[in-house]
Figure (tube, rainbow, N blue to C red):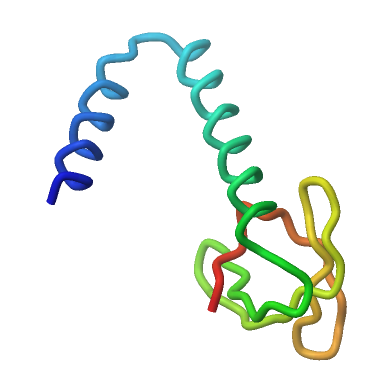
Length: 88
């Protein structure tokens, strides 16, 4: 429950931002945090979901890079940003 309250507080504070420059800086920071979390929680051989706007595709990580990983999906290999992956 505490996490939900802090998330609502974060959303409230974000909604108070009144210029695009600050919102863009926040967006960049969030992307960097997602990439860092991906590097620390994902690993080669792990089964993942590659999340797109309208679908999730299963895959297996074959190689880790700085901000992306090679993922085998449906017989092909793709370079996928960590921010688009979730552990299965």
